[in-house]
Length: 203
Image (cartoon, rainbow, N blue to C red; front, side, top):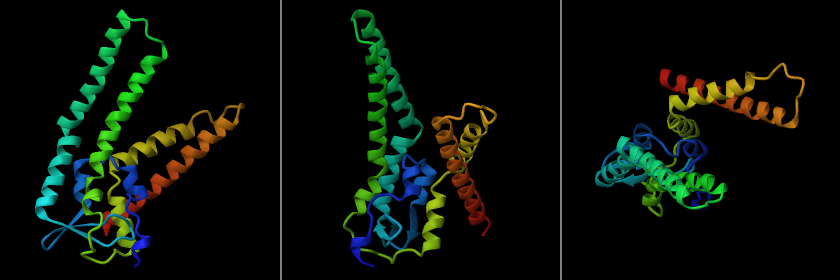
């Protein structure tokens, strides 16, 4: 397969769980002789990651996405909000500054998580293939395994809640139809993903 067809960015399923938990991180790698195979995309061959490299990636991600890392991120956002609240009592800050501070803090923390979550892709970029690309069914199964069951159930529940509310209203505006359409699509998509994941685990 031509190298020009290879997409070095995460697939759709990987993007949906880009801020993946520790268990999902481990599913990115397939044990093999000499270390682990990492497939950067559906069309890419497997890239060899040594045992030492895997241990370093795993350790770094655990520091970021583990309990301590998540707690640090939460404390940082709360601390910024507290500092802004104190500053507001002494200075005449504009009303929109509060929302800006919270949004900026959340974006910075999210970008920090994203940067660390794509470390495997940065590591193997430019490396030769150690194995051929996976078949379509195998790559789809691997992508589904990256979507945690908690996310499947949460999206089905939330989208179902939005889909089922206000069904008897007479004021069916464009916004109402947009919410129903989007929530319906999410509900059907994750119901299908859940069914496929269940079937994968039964096989």
